[in-house]
Length: 228
Image 1 (cartoon, rainbow, N blue to C red):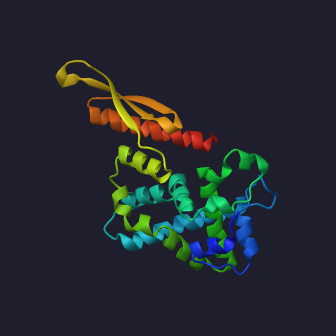
Image 2: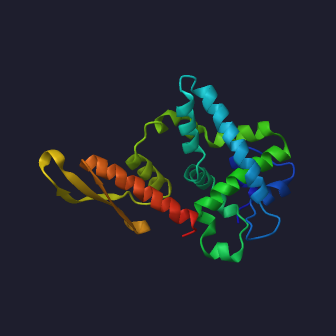
Image 3: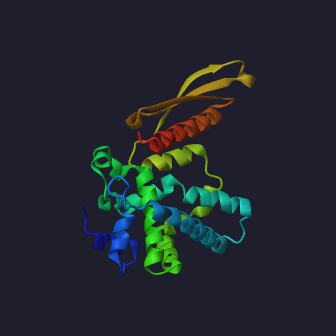
């Protein structure tokens, strides 16, 4: 495990009570005194922090667009990406079972821990300090947040895979049936490293590919949620 001094440097915040940070890093598999309650609080703080930042940064966007962007920024994948940027997995306190099953790199654990840290910062000092930490960690994503409004499924899938150092997917046309003006295309999306293979149908190659990408991403999310 790395020194938590480095983690505090990466967060841009030094804890007065380091035990608060250690609790935020403690998974339920390690001890009864763990980060679950902190994660509950941190989830609410994060939602508020991102909503406030988007409101201030993008006065031209409507409520629906802001909601869509916030959802994309605070989801598990986004949080896990940020957690990986600060090597959060290396600081976790995990039970033997989670350790052996790859818990240090599991997106759900990383996301929950990051939210617990936000709560720990607020309890150690103030909610304002936690907002500062969140703003720092999410700066790049917030700066380019408008791109999330119209981002297509293939782009979302590719960025998710790149963030997790996984090779880009292959899209193969399996078949094309029907007359030219009413063709139905069958496209396969294949991600070798994850052993993910899905097929989708559409009225064009582009439509079928987009649907296949969406299905592939959904399958990956379900596997992560189930701890596979």
